[in-house]
Image 1 (tube, helix red, strand yellow):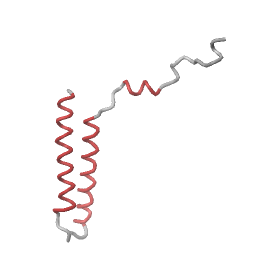
Image 2 (cartoon, rainbow, N blue to C red):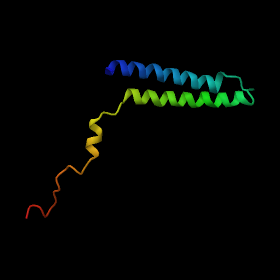
Image 3 (cartoon, rainbow, N blue to C red):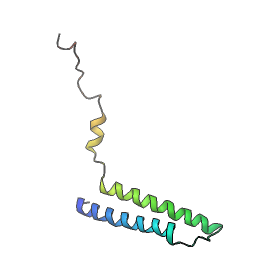
Image 4 (cartoon, rainbow, N blue to C red):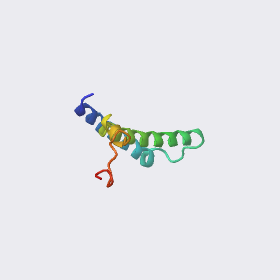
Length: 83
């Protein structure tokens, strides 16, 4: 997927997640009881997941990042190696 398409999708998902979060907090009926209260909670979690997914879309991890943490392939050098 191209970087421009990923970032466009990230912005769209971010705005949709923020809009859903604002609706859950400020716009949804506050007298929801029972199962509807659980639905409101699920919508809030969905909003947070959408915002997290947009960050993942905007800044994806590359396969090269995993190689930087691997120190087993690096040569062992220290102060006594020069002797």
